[in-house]
Image (cartoon, rainbow over the protein chains, first blue to last red):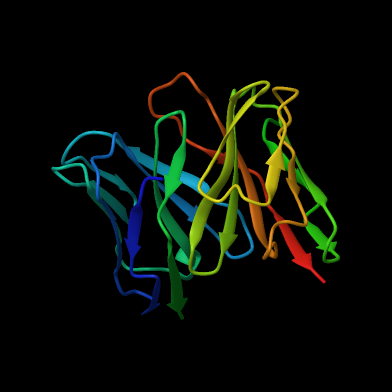
Length: 109
Length: 114
């Protein structure tokens, strides 16, 4: 199956610090999607990027899709305790969805 | 409210037993998926189905079986052939015809072999 690698696997930050997770694919992606899974919960869709170089923002979250459409990043500015969870990148074509390994974010108050 | 329902939330199985996990959706989605989640390994695709009476193996299908007799339902059976079945299982669904659909997930079933 399609390989989507995500780093780091774990990240601990002090509340108020920034956080970034990176997603890389060996092949060109038709789109990149980001999901958040709260502890004990299930993944919930955050956003989708489809254009080369696309940047989208949701309040303190900034999502980028690389120019070659092989990588993406999620950046959170000034983390809050509500940001705790695992963030997954993924790519779907309507036939299959493949997800990265996820980055588990811990925010220390 | 529309959504995906997985049951049960927690399931315990003795070694050597088959067990079936339920997944029902009322979103009118054609596509449905089963994923397995283990710590540090993300979401791995077990099986997926694009239409009733048709399904395809994902990356880790060995030891699992599925059926898709109804659009709304996509049950997953964990057989005794699955050597390490303890995991968190997630069912998802999506629209099939759109180019870039998002996946909607159920609440998950945590299976423990005792």
